[in-house]
Image (cartoon, rainbow, N blue to C red; front, side, top):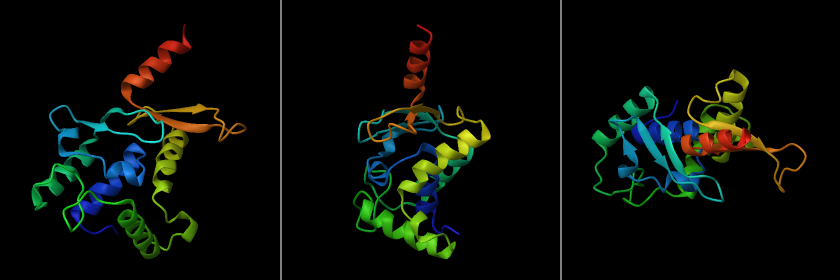
Length: 164
């Protein structure tokens, strides 16, 4: 359904790590460590940045994309104009792919990927798969809580504090 190596790499990376569209544009090639199977995730809006694991299929798709990419830019995902991919471009793409997949219009926005992976991991009991999801109460979601995505180090720190 998703065409092109860049788009496959973008949407898989965003889904697996619960990234916002603007966080996709922040990723740099140097954030990838294929030897250790890790990626440095730069978060916005008060979320925790940190190192996350790369799954084998994700690493394979990212390597494939990098081999065919014609840009010398240090930015991992670039537009056709060789600039960091924008939120607007990603919004257009997800709406287009959503229509092709016959998804409801209200589900055709990039942020749905952030919620989808958290829901998937909690439903399957695999919260440690690529990140630790913690339910916390916030001012925005005081009644139901909100999922936070934590890096390895942050998850360890949260666990340690829970037992103090």
